[in-house]
Amino acid sequence: MSRAQGLPISTIIIAAIGLIVLVILSVMVAQKAGTFGKGTREQTDVKCEGEIGTPVPLAECQNPVYGTFTNVRSDQICCKQ
Image 1 (cartoon, rainbow, N blue to C red):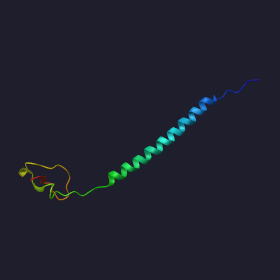
Image 2: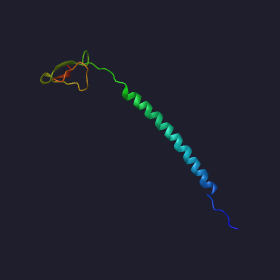
Image 3: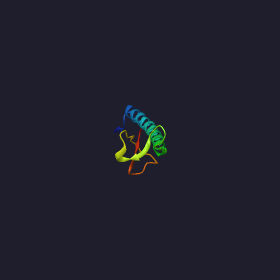
Image 4: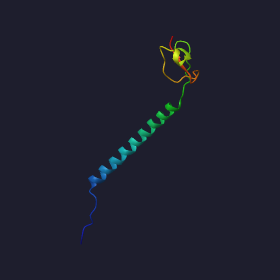
C-alpha cells in the first residue's frame, strides 16, 4: 500500500499568507492610483495678472515667469515687472 504524496501543511499556510498579502497590497495600490488620477484630472486656470506679472511680447521681458497661463498668447510671455 503506497501513501499519497501531498504538500506539507507549512507550504499551504505560507502560500495562503502570501496570497492574503498580495490581495491587500493590490487594494492599496488601486486606491492610491485612483486618488492620483483624480488629482491629475483637476486643472486650475491660472492667469498672468496682478502679483504674478503681465503678458508682454517675448523680446521685451527681463524677468519671465514660466508656466501655462490662460491669458498669454503664443507670441507673449508672462513677465514680472
